[in-house]
Image (cartoon, rainbow, N blue to C red):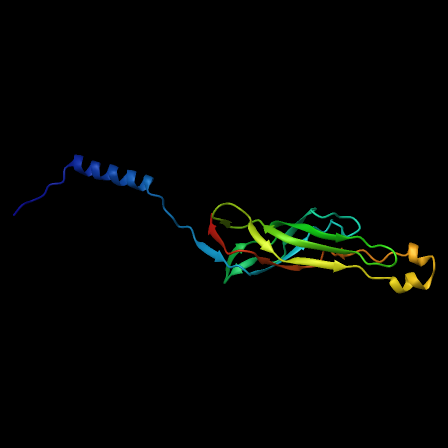
Length: 177
């Protein structure tokens, strides 16, 4: 019967290799979730911004914030208040005789906030839009002769305190930090 004897040198060598292996091999405890395309998210505009067809131009970027957290089960993926962007894509100013204004704003992206980030550090791509038309005043404009030249319709205005639904434009992988 052979008896193996562990020497002090062998023990230290094994301990050193184990220690180096622990340093070099990454430990991954990151949780990963997919935020599916088409997921509805609730957003609102910055309350200090006036969103009106009479004041904004096509291409103007607007700030949005997430008004409800994005959850999968009880797991918080993106916290309420995450910042994002929208862009004005169409503007028609109100005009005479009584023609209403119109504004269209498209949601473009949402940043992450909370314990999860996209795998490449980019924002979550959004889709969806809000469109508002002003009130027409054609009848009033045509009732008076001067009204044809002076009475304009109402501007298209989006109230910044309203909650709007945007959608996730493409499936996004989120992982814990």
